[in-house]
Image (cartoon, one colour):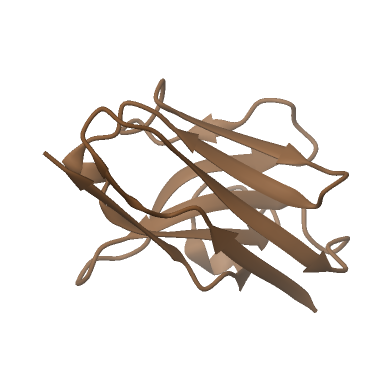
Length: 124
């Protein structure tokens, strides 16, 4: 089993920055895709950033490209999401997820393992 635990969510003002962390435990050899999603009440999960372990190039949603950076520290089994220039529309519960590449970037059904989420609130 794989367990994911997010942390780092907080309330910040617009223009501020946060770094989210996702600590991973368990055997991840069955996964090759790591992503951050976000969700607001009443809406579906929205893909934010992803890394395919066989590629060096991460992929970002248009809404966050240039402001967010996904990275991983394999020695610490941790994935990060650095969020800069935050906007009120970035307010959401943020989840990290691990899955298997099936040809789609942000298809939630491809991600078998999910964390419990960490709340990010951005005020104007």
